[in-house]
Every structure is written in structure tokens, then in C-alpha cells.
Length: 256
Image 1 (cartoon, one colour):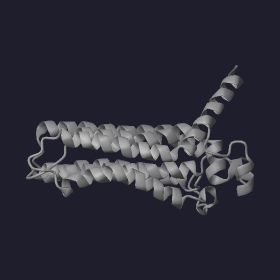
Image 2: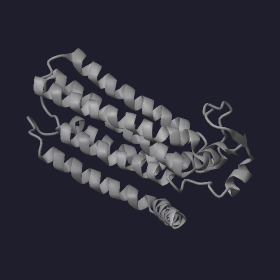
Image 3: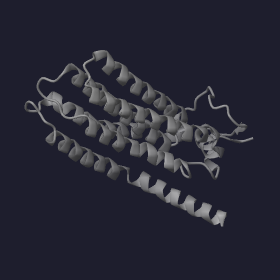
Image 4: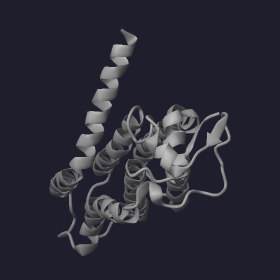
């Protein structure tokens, strides 16, 4: 019974992986459409003090275009995928492993981004619209004269959503294309994510003048982001270190 269940789950993950790989262009077009409509709705519902100019539109253009452009660039950067150079310095030391050739790794039955890796792929991809939705819900469109704290908060929050959405998109493509650097790339992005949340808090406090209710909402948002990153690390770091699939696919080594 367990073997049959495992076989069904493997078949489902393989089907989902194939669907993702063959429909990337549709996913990218869907992102442009949905993100564009959501941004337009946010602008329309914002209480603008003056007509929205190019500077006011720019954050929304970045929000829409940055993940799309990052995926296009990553697909070009990682076109060779697992044929890209492997890191010379091994950072993942947990477990007992034996190195094998790249061709032997490709012939291994667990080679590829299937299995549980599909859940990680989907999680990184979903992270992009989730971050965008949080940003649109929290940040109104700005025009005319606005308080310094609001202008600063808007700037750092825009930087956060654009930077992290782009980085997670790049990590997604790296995992999908079996790039050897993927595990340490994702670990670096996790660290950047945590640093960004702490930096936003420090910058907004330094500016001063933040209303109490806004400060409380911002604290809740940043703490939520930190918790999500820490949960991701707790869930996925052991997998990235100890999974046979990950080690075969991204490190060309098998259990000793």
C-alpha cells in the first residue's frame, strides 16, 4: 500500500514538473496580466493628492516587470543548466557521500527536480505573487506632497518586493534547470530576505514620524515575513543538505 501511494505521488510530482516546464511562457504572460490588473486596481483605489506622474507609476512598473525580466534572464543564464561549473569548495558536509561523474549522476534514478523538489519549486514561485499582494495591500500609490516617513517606507518596501521577487524567481529557474549552485543560491537569498526585513525596520525608525497604527501594522508585516523565512529554512535546509535527490542532482554525489 505504501509503495503504491509513493508511486502515485511520484507520478503526480512528475506530471506537475512537466506542466511547469512546458508552460513557463504561459505563467509569465499570466503574471504580467494579473500583476498589471492588480496594480491598476491599487492605483485606482488610492487617495491621490495629485495626478499620478511617472515617478508614482515607476514602483508598479518595477513590481510587474522585474520578476518577468528576471525569469527571462535566468532562463538565458542557466540555459546549460547542470553543465555549468560546479563549486570547488564543498559547503554541504552533512552525511556520507561519494562523488560521481556528471554523466553517472544524470543516469541516477533520483536525478532531476522531481519528487519533493517540486514542492520547493512551487513554493518559490508562489512567493512572488504573495509578496506582490502584500505590497499592494500595504502600500498605496503616492502623488504630490507626502510625509517623509511615508515616502521612505514606500521606497524601502518597493525595494524589498522587487529585489526578493526577482531573486526567488532566479532561484526557481536555477532549481528547475538543475544548476549546481542552486542550494547555496537559495541559502544566500534566505539571508538577504532576513537582512531586508531588519533593514526596513531600522530605516523607517531612523526617519521618525511614523504613526503608531502604521508602526504596529509594519511591525506585524515584518515579523510575519521573518517567520516565513525562518519556517522555510527549518523545513527546507535539512532537505537541501540530506536529500539524495538534491545531492545527486546538484552536487553529483551519491550515498557512500
